[in-house]
Each structure stands twice: as structure tokens, then as C-alpha cells.
Image 1 (tube, rainbow, N blue to C red):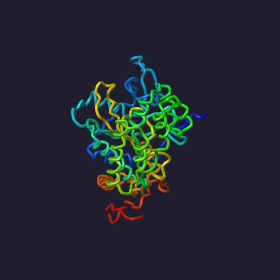
Image 2 (image 1 turned 60 degrees about the vertical axis):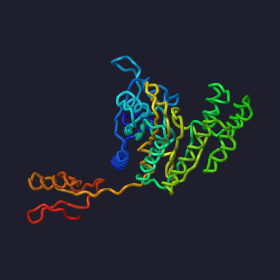
Image 3 (image 1 turned 90 degrees about the vertical axis):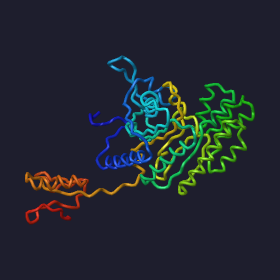
Image 4 (image 1 turned 180 degrees about the horizontal axis):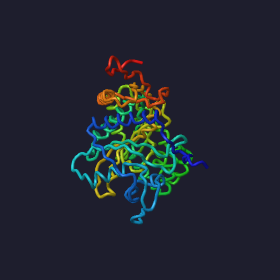
Length: 386
């Protein structure tokens, strides 16, 4: 095999695409800062137990593992930044009130999330700690929508779910851990036949409720159907009420955003404990952003705090986002003339891109698409349209 061939689902990012990704990354961080979110930069690797404690089997399988040559302990390359940010909130910041944090950096996955997915996503995320009310859920969802709208990905659809609905039904079903795992897999595949087989020993009302989850998806009328069909369990009733509240506020603030529901949706990591969402756009291969409430994520670090957040892959977002026009540049000759060098420096200080043409390369072009040229006119250097 040639030395320049990269592993499957790992790719270089070339100049034009890299520019597009970087512009989106900057806009995402600027949007988060506008909301009051502080940037943190967790390390790429850390002790395995810190990365994986309480996150479930899915994240464990996605994590590359290695032995630390200094301590002999097992370390992991992060597959998701949320546990790291929870650690930062719990042990480094240790604030008593609200903490708004954001991040953007690469994560590594042992397996791609889909046929065309990268194993090295550039993960952007925002998280708010310390507020248990729905106001925090709505703020995170609003930030996610504003960020995606700024990237110009087209019409957006928010798909809402709640981890407490499936959890409450399973708690009341009497199913053991192995059976619960099978239920999760069947719900992910919308496999009604498998669900019926698993719940055959359940009390009839509970078995029917679990089986019926696969059909509880669609528009806002799904909530009314769920209230009629699902058992009157406190967590189920609370979840449906809060989903209705979030839906009403989204529709009011974003009239052009469609809202749908999938009450059987359990995709993503196992740490979600409440309302959760996925956001879709027409040109995207899958959800562009996922998030929700995960109040227990910091408990393994000795500080259980209310928490809600979202994340997205900036590389994937770039494939669905509108391609931005190149910012025109200025072509300048290379030379040792002091006035020429001063003119170039002045233009760059003003924010202009100035590309100096090296001797012998006058006919070459690059992606900056220079539309102006720095030329000597009557003894002075002036910018002239090409």
C-alpha cells in the first residue's frame, strides 16, 4: 500500500474546503459568544475512566484506547467532548451558579457514524450548567437554530423526543437489563415484531405501550395521541408537557422552522436524561445537530448539576451549508523596494489579502482570485482593478 494512502473514513481537507469549514467554525464560536458562552479547550486524550465513566457502551466502542508510556494507565482519545466539559465544570470551574461553556475541536471515532461519515469529526458544542428549568433547554435549542441558520443550510426541522418516556415505561415493565437492551435496539430499528416478542411477558397495558412507541412520530398531534395511549406515569406526563412547551416556544420564535416528534428516538449517547432534539436540513445526510438535557453527566465527577447542550460536526455542516463567495484579494509584485513593502503592509493592516507574486510565477493562479493589482503609478504604489 502506498505511504500516502490514508485509513478508511479519514481524509485530508484541502484549501477551498478548509477555508469553508474555518469560516463556519468562526461564525459558530462568534454566535456562542453572543449568547454569553465561554470557550474551553479540553485535551485530545486523557485517562480512560474520566472519558467513559457513566457514558454508556456506545461511547466506549467509539473510543480509541492506548497505554500511557509515562504512567502505564489506559488513556483514550476523546470520541465526544461533553464528558470533558462536565469534568471542567465540576472540578476546575466549580461555580455555584450558571456556567455557559462552548468548545470546538476534533474528536476521533473507531467507526464511522454512517457510510459517508468521517472518523475525525470537528465537533462544535455548547453547554449550560446549573439551571434545571426549561429556560436552559430553550436557550440551547435557540442557539443551535441560530447557528445553523447563520450557516445557511436551508429550511430547518426540529425533531423532539424525551429520554424519560422510554425510561419510565421500561422501569414499569419489569424487563431485565438484557431485555431493555433489546428494546433499545428494536426501537432504533422501528421493529414492531421484535418489540412484541420482547414484551410478551409484560403486563398487557405496559407491553402495548412499549410496542406502540414505534408509531408515535409525526407532527404536534403525536403528543395528544401519546397522552391517550401511554400509561399515566408521572415521568411520561411531565415529558409530554415539557415537549409541548418547547414546541410552542420554537414555533413562536421561529415560524419558518418545522417541529416534529419521535417519542421512540434514542439515538446518540446514553447520558441524556430529559428532552432531546435533532435538527435536520434538506441537503444534509443526517441530523446536523443533536442535543438535549443530561443532568447526570457530572455525577461521576462528584458534582451532579443540571446540564443541557448540543453538538455538531463542523465538517458535516460545511457539506450542507451554502458556499460563500471568495473574498477578493490583491496581487502584488515581489520586490525589495521600501515603498512597495510599506504599501503591502498597510493594505494587510486594513484587512486586505495581498498575494505577492514570486519571481518566475507570474502566470500562476490560486484560489484567492485576485481582482485588483498593486502597481506603481507615477512613482506611487496604487491598487488598480484587474
